[in-house]
Image (tube, rainbow, N blue to C red; front, side, top):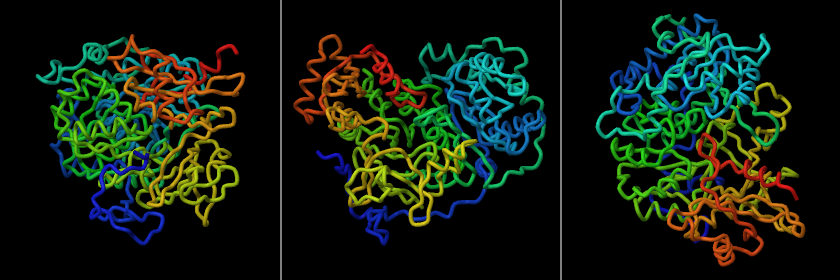
Length: 578
């Protein structure tokens, strides 16, 4: 089956339109959106007035209602302003998924400040950059992370250091005894209930809320900076992506409309909220809609299956590796996924074999999407009525994407592989403090600025985009170009393979050769050999793509957002003596 095979093709649901770049746009959707010109805080005010007693989120059986979310965010915003936070100031948000993340996010917005989300996996050695680069003076974190943050802060020069740190216990928003059916892994519960001593000078979350400071009238405007998420890119230290309320609202509105979401939606928030995808679908869009989220603090496949089954989750945006892991559970057949109406994700292509299994066993179509931190998550998405496998989808509302030659920047015709460039209302305003990098990230086509994604792909005749790989990841084996993601997707069809990551290994003859790091399916561990993988590959892919080296691993390293960290494996491989 070719990579662009359709998973569903109801012709009545889509109709050719006037735009030759999007000929199969869903008939149910407008091509452009009239996006509200308001701030993110205004979204919470509206939903709290409309649905005061409705669940904003559910966390291990305890509900935080919209009126409570609003009141707590106002109280924390008052504390922030009382401690010197002013309009436009950057505030670190260094937390796992939790109700406190939502409260803190909207408190920072209510204080007219800017959220700087930080990966909670970062350690003290890494945290200094996130304090000094945005010139942050206040941070909100949890008790288990406060020590690392304080350690990083203590290493800085006095003029660069934080003024205040607020720390919460994650269990502060959990019931003391979990309700029946809300069981969680023992290790997760022990972590959630931990109450380590706080470093000197750190303010407890409960104490900050108890002060009941009232914030001043909201001052932020739609074009004010609202979010500064950091992206690693390909070179140098991570750079902050400047997003205003105006660049975040298009996907808050459009993402919901695209995925059939409404105030009645109940979504599973497990993609980390510090990550742009988790933030959009777990923090920003649900509050705009007035919908509810079931929050998972960390990925656990059995817990995810139980939460979907128990709460009748309707929408789940995830990383394909989560679906793969869910299928790896010995209990997955006991999960009831019939409530899911929309299952989507990105970050990596969904392997065709896994998508077909999902459809065959659960009747669910996985609608892949595509976006970057710089585009506030999706710039492309598959319409669920007509999703294509291993496909980025089509450019969404107001987005114009092209494929250009990465060297000459000349636009390429359909079917040819080049760099994907994107123009749209959700594209960021530039990299914080890096005007040169910002200038290099954009080109002009037809008088419009297009963001250079750094991703290679192609557009088909129906307006759908397909990714080939990152520009920097290509393997050159004896002059043949090998795209690791393509080989990975083929390997997922192998009955022995649960997960695969392709990297380059030095080769005296070929220059580089293909190496596969493989996680075997549970039933084949201890029996399968590297030669079995190589033999299967020879039967299923071109000879130059076949891995010459195979290494088995218990697990692949993953980022906090669930993406396979191929760079770690690649760097370790290249560090080996020649």
